[in-house]
Image (tube, rainbow, N blue to C red):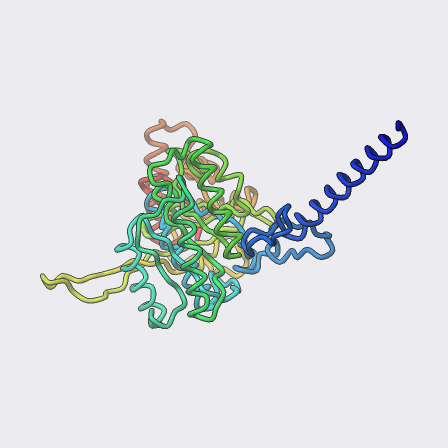
Length: 388
């Protein structure tokens, strides 16, 4: 009897083991425990892969050569008045057209511009940029979404955006390669950008966009007062493969710094001039103008091949020569006003014994004179100087 009971127990254990193995196999094959196959959309989507079979094209920075890659998260940020949106629009338009961006090759593809910040403004700017480039907007594979969106509190909007992009890919016969979100604060829809929960939710939905569409996602964001990094919780900064920082150099001249590149070299600077195109006139007969940016080829004065300075006084030449020397030593063409004043003193045109007010007055005059001769860019408000 005891042997019979043991046999029964062993058989039951063996059956349980076999059932468990069958359930595991069924689950791996996309079936439920009763043997019914799951719906297509419910199949397991996460699969392990050998590194040898995994691609790394996105790390090669080929969407804009040396600046950003495919399927990345790129944060473009800066203070108000630094032409962030204009630069983002030029980038999106250049990629859609397959034209170089600031002399860099791009990978052509369909681009999307989400503009909860202000759809009317971005449309005006798009018309102005298209006129400047000599293209018909209807023929350019770029599309805008002129609605408020919520990428913070639920998945409703991000799912609809993904569905819409996939439909457009079929319609245009092109893959979407870039999605601009302008701006982060408006896409948060009232969420707390300083809190890890809301900013983390925004980053998660950017990731969902990036993974489902397989496009680079470029949020446009502001900086904190006096800061030089994206405003709010660090989760956005930490999620970025590339960070692009915009600053104002002078009236109508802005700069974009390649501040951080996860898989490349940072530190490069791109300069732009803000321009306008007349698009017509309003009902009162006043001109309608839209703004855009044009890459500006700024060549620092100290670089080889720069034409010699003309019509310079001896004092101006001495200051400019010292400025060039310091620029090469520092490997930077940018100076604060205080640094420029020190350069003036080092050049010998300012006596170190003069009063502080006299010292600043002479430096101010020299700065204005060199700016008028197009030797430097001088921003009076920000009190900065840059060699040209």
